[in-house]
Length: 376
Image (tube, rainbow, N blue to C red; front, side, top):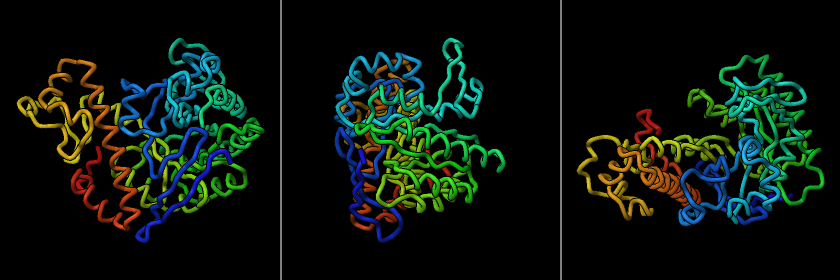
């Protein structure tokens, strides 16, 4: 196995677990939140700022990097680590999510997916083999198998066909990756809200030598209750000795719910995306920095946070930057939001160590207003 997982402790209260993942570019404790760097950059932030926050693994997007600048450019640069000057771990998605998000620009076939380039309209073809070849060129530590991420809701018949295709595609990814001892490969369990299909997909994929397993097809519009139900019966199906990754989830409530059910790894564009809309995650709920109430507020953004933004700038100044459409405002909010989630994960790990997970969950739900249906 290129990627190694060590289980340190499982909570006495629930399925939450503490572990360490080791990749060719370092180790990190889990549960972990991974900032998303779609275009070989976590939007507006430098490598040094990410390191100061404490980020140890980030994501790159195979589809978007294939489109621009091109995997050949990144390969010639020495891989994604050298290209973006990031010496720590990198996970690349497979392009499978774009099967969902770019549904107006693609056609699914057995061999792969025909895309219409969203930038210039050119026709493109992405197959499991091509996805792995691109990810090899990118040189990420963790590659994802190419899959279909179906929309919610989907009929049982469509989902069954999709799951069977995803399993076939996963096998083709493994075949294409034979002999690669520098990069790990994770499989993705699909199946929508259908328990028997999730079980079937997980059991089939477990027959093969994947480095880890992801749960896909959630956070695509389904109610929170369904997401939690799916996690409750899907996560226990995954191997205990390998990482478990829930794709595309980044709100405090959803992270806590998933950790409670045994998930180790998370990613989401949320912290930087809402920053670009002037929103901040804080220990007192979500703040909209455009609100007039912050105009004369010369206190830190979050009095319980010790990030660069909170140590150096006030709500009044941040509101001014956002209202003036200054890039610095988006940068400072992005720094804070990623630090906020990084700190939350550290609290979660401590709570698992001390068997106080439910105490932490209750406090976070109350502080952030999650119990009232708000979750950023």
